[in-house]
Length: 120
Image 1 (cartoon, rainbow, N blue to C red):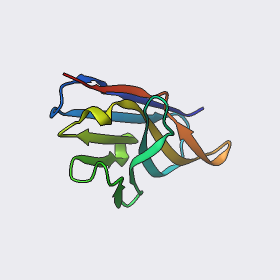
Image 2: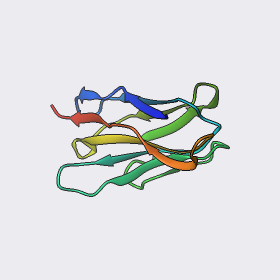
Image 3: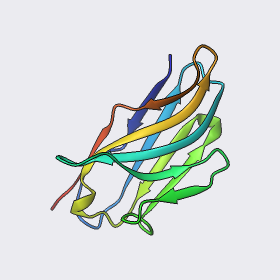
Image 4: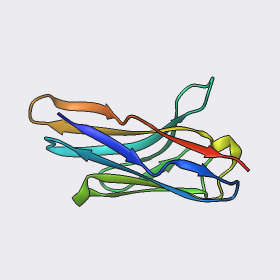
């Protein structure tokens, strides 16, 4: 069984920073793309940033220049460094990973979400 566990969310003032982490654990052959999504109240879940196994990255226009996604393949962990945070960044942030397991092959997995609130 595979688990994705996020950490690092919380309350921060506008202009502040947070670093989210997401560690994948369990019986895993390989992890391919990983990403961060977010969902604000009353809105659809949206892709924030993604990173391939080769560490190519992509970002939503709304976070370019402020957020940085990275990964540590040895730790099966993906990070999201969030700087210059704005109230509109307030949302539940979810980790996502495309990975292969010995029992179920290739699959798409999600973390439980971590709340990020940007407010003065």
